[in-house]
Structures are given as C-alpha cells and as structure tokens.
Length: 226
Ligand SMILES: [Ca+2]
Image (cartoon, rainbow, N blue to C red; front, side):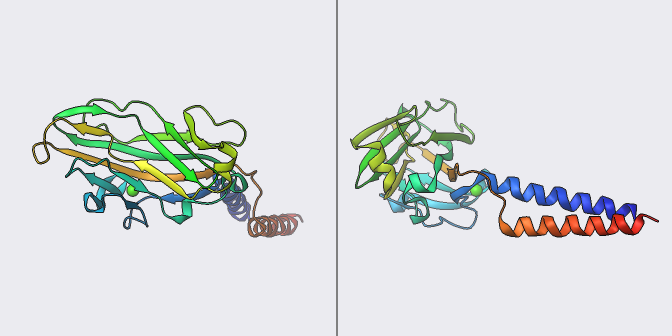
C-alpha cells in the first residue's frame, strides 16, 4: 500500500512537470535533426543539411562559394501575428566553424519584415577564434517599444508584429579577404526557436489526469484506514 502512495506521488509530480513544460510555450522551432525543415536561402547551393555536429545532431550548414552575402529564411511556422501569438523572443544557436583569410566579421543578426514594417536585431560580435562553438543568440520581442538591440527600418514596430511575413537570419557573418576558392568560410545555425509568453494554464487533459490521480490516492488511503 505504501508503494501505491509513492507511485501516486510520483505520478502527481510527473503531471506537474507536464504542466510546467507547457509554460515554455514554444511557438515554432527548428532543430534541423531530420533535414532543413523548410528553411530556404538566397544562395541555396551554399546551404546544406548536416546530420551531425550540431547542438546537438543535425544543423543548417553554410559553405561559402561566392562573394554573396548569404541569408536564410524561416518556414511559415515562424510567421504570423506576433502580438496575438504572445511572442516573447526569437533565438538561434550559431557556430562559425572554419575560417581562413578573415577580412571582417559582422554581429549576430535577425531581420523581421512584413507589410506593416521591418526591423533588424543586432547582437554581440562573435568570438574571433574558430570554431566559435555553438553560441545562443536571443532577441527579446515585446509589444510597445522595441526591446534593446532592435532598430525599426521601416513602418512601425507594432505594425511589423501584427503580421511578420519574413524571418531572415544572415548566416554569413564572415567576409573573407581572398578571392573565391582561396579561402575557407563554413558557418552553421541550429535550434531556431520562437517562444511565447502566454500565461501558464494547465491543459484540460493534464487537469483531468491530476484529478484522477488524486481520486485514486484518496481511495487507496481510505482502504488503508482500518
Ligand atoms: Ca540540431
């Protein structure tokens, strides 16, 4: 009987864990563990899915082959009305993997645009030793004034958040000084995540499960009483 009580408490703890996981409220995420997941690029031939070496497992890998500035674009799951979705941040992991003949290096960047406006987030300057290792870049998003790091380029911040139709990450941060073919420039991104801030409310399924567990516990305890 004591075991039943213990299992009941463990079950309760697991239900609690399920509820707190829902708090994270991931609106969209790409882990690149099974492919490119709908991500596209202005230079598709320089973008490839790499099945290992990410953070962890697969990642989106850029290998520079021309003088272009390569960016990648998120799939539709990252688009929409950020205000009503309660989006609180967008983040990704970046690794500048291998470089020679480094000319200049840009800051980590995220660009959002839509019919109501466009804005650019500039993060830190990447480390200058390669590989940099996987570094998480997080841009806060909230209604009202744009959070630190954002610059509104056109329209308004509120207009932009009302309908984000493009999420762009410049994956090519390093500009090399040699001509094409004489330098190495390999960079990657992983774990792009759009996070929401909506209040934690246990889902009905979790609530009814918790109720069942409590009922079961009460019944067991009753049976133990002589
Ligand atoms: Ca991954």
